[in-house]
Image (cartoon, rainbow, N blue to C red; front, side, top):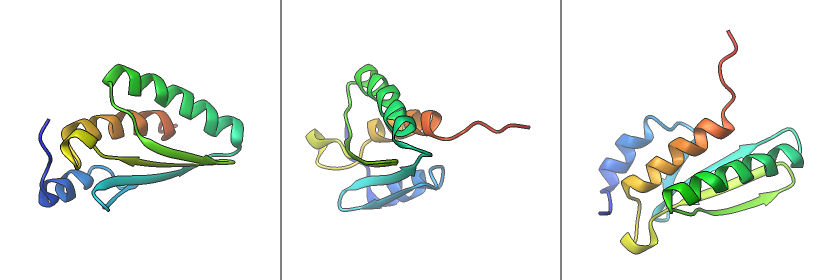
Length: 98
């Protein structure tokens, strides 16, 4: 998978308002009500990571999950990172309750 240009990354990020690009990766931070909810989301994300065979650099402090995505073999951000970001968004963002 080839590395995306900075311009391509910035354009793609328009669809991901919770994410920022810096230090050669895309980054997001998600806050949950408590540790249990945060850890539950991490567990669901882990299954998506395995399915995509792509794994984040992430950390958890109580109810906050910090994620950085980059494709190490490409030395930067690729389409694979945005695929995983989309899957993560589907897990951590609450659905609209109309």
